[in-house]
Length: 468
Image (cartoon, rainbow, N blue to C red; front, side):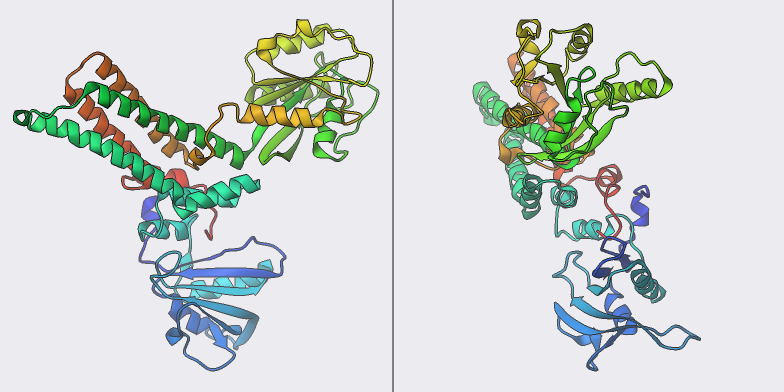
């Protein structure tokens, strides 16, 4: 992905890109935005009925052909298409926009794009259409980030939440936060600048308002973590010693035989990854090798890979054989998950149980009994996973899609509010509180785009695809 550089995003240029996924498909779209869009359309498009494309009504659809009228070349028909005409300012970018809907396919889309570029457009940079929507005032930074959330959504929940943010629901919450912060800032500013007016700023009232604001900020930070899970997926490792039923459980969760299962130990020799959906939670699950004492190079590589995934995961499902007493390998793994988010699965519940649950520290995680082979207890495991993912009980309305830079700005806002709490407790002069409130407002502005820099824009648009 090309690195975001603000100077490359020249607003005066007319930009073009293939807006659909490249490859063999029924339809493909080439999108053009800018002052030359209609002129370009008139030169590459031949309408079915003779008309001046530059003068047609906005938001109309026209049937015809894309024509190659290159110098020194015989006029050739490239494809039969539909041309959408959308005039500014009622467009995604607030500029004149045309969209050429052709048959799908790499060759035909590249040819149409090539002709458009020959007529004066340049290839759009990643996220440049959305960048223009932001600069044009059609959307703010929160809505820009939600667009990436829609594209990356791996579940219906993620899609619904990203769509809500695109509608402006999150923007309204941030605006309300700003109103409350600004009110406190004005009060403290007035008390400093007009001491003769004897403006009373109640310490108790101020403390209550700051605590309420801090709670809202904490909720948004927790919500941004949930949004990240919805987009990226929650990394979950299934581990356990050899032949405890890890792969059977893996297949059961996938509802298909993804991994070879055998009564012989050590069948899985590598880390196998798949993504599943549990109650709207995209779960990236990893079935790991159960070999803890490698005897050959392949087993050693499998173990190293398992340990790497293990160190990076968000959740561990440790599978134990309920029909056997705990062994040294089991004890080793129980110690390894000591500081992890963990669910203990006591597998093979269909057999006579010999495992002593008292040897499993209760504070370490949830215990679920099940039989992977019979499919018993699967619902209980899925409920446990859901609760582990959303163990903070975050208000669903607080879930917000933020870039890394926006999360940092929100975290800094929270730090400033915590400082104000300390200042109030220590009865510091009002000037200290006033300065931190100003910092809060600056950081809040970075969320919506009222205050933004190249670094902020880079954190969002460098992750966009070309054509969006």
